[in-house]
Length: 77
Ligand code: FES
Image 1: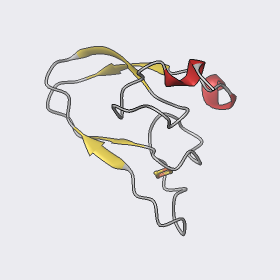
Image 2 (image 1 turned 90 degrees about the vertical axis):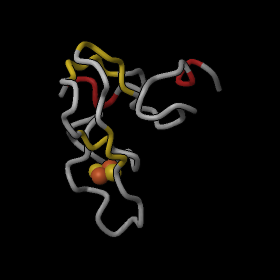
Image 3 (image 1 turned 90 degrees about the horizontal axis):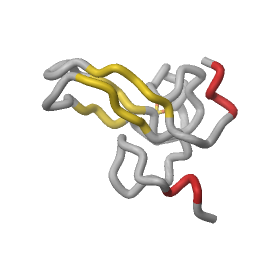
């Protein structure tokens, strides 16, 4: 994905009720989702199921206070 070097969020299309795994370690090559690269870090992905289908901006900088969603934290600091 082209956004992987960017710290800004990635816009994704989510399906209600489906389980997604959001990368919490920052190593995944398929941000914002886990690709298994966390192995050995002791960090596990965050499993979540959206209540509604639609677009969402998922955090890539991993500093959000409301994971997996972007809260604008990538802009500060
Ligand atoms: S690759 Fe980052 S949590 Fe799995």
